[in-house]
Length: 135
Image 1 (cartoon, helix red, strand yellow):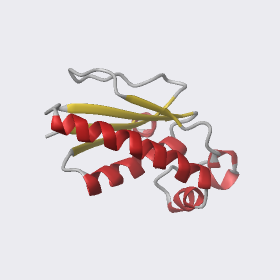
Image 2 (cartoon, rainbow, N blue to C red):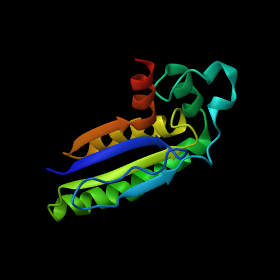
Image 3 (cartoon, one colour):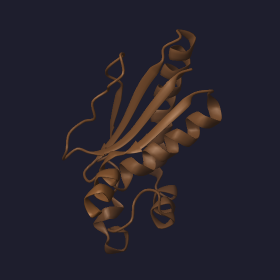
């Protein structure tokens, strides 16, 4: 079964490394999408919070961005399954790894689960680091 590793990350810390034998994968830059982190009401929230989700659900540029991402990833996932590949990695980066990249990673995971028989490994790198630092 194909494993799709989906990560959100902050460009400030660098691009995630693919530990699988395939290496590489996809890196999508979410910084061209309007950032809810610019507004006080969203600063402490992430792309998994309802207020941020609502913000993006009403933002056409996010819909357009994800439509293109889904098209590219669907083509690769279908081909990887056909060729019996074991791993593919998809990364979404933004400035802080908190809003745009988290939302995009979550949406891709939902999309792929509904369309393909694949294992999803979803990781929000920056958010996990913040949790560890808060302990």
